[in-house]
Amino acid sequence: MIETPIANIFMPVRVLIEMHREEDACDVIVEMEDGTMYTALFATMQYVQRQMTLQYIVTKDLVETPCVRYCAIDTPHILVEQLDRDTIEDTIDNLIALDVFEGLFTRVTETEEETTRRTITDGKLATQEVAAVVVQDVLVCNEV
Image (cartoon, rainbow, N blue to C red; front, side, top):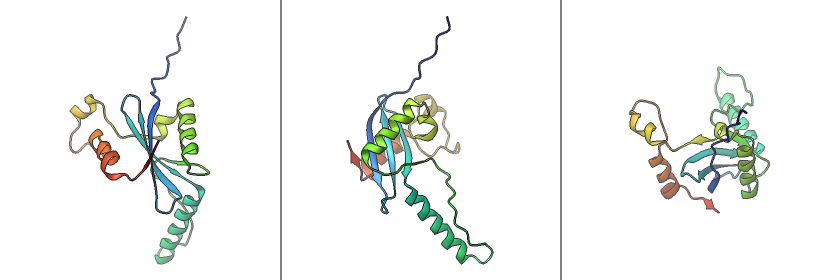
């Protein structure tokens, strides 16, 4: 009999939310049972519309570009109808249940093996130390 491997995902123990000034997006940090931290940007359609308007203003001021509304999203964004804690936490639960959480969130902690073989020029931007500083010293956030 072939056994199906069980997913090795831990459950969240803490969800930190930092609302953006415009209140149409927020940064979310999720700490898992094993201490691993992940981050993603949660946004509403108003955020996307605001980004499109900002791009239109930029293209309007550049002589060589046609005026057009667009939004190019380069980092993980999770679109939701509203940015209340219940919606964010329920979305996280669904992403874990659907086994797509790790594909949509950016892990900001490293394993010990990754830390020991990391060099200054390998392009890593986030480490466990950086995540700890962000959580403790930088974020002004709501916590459960």
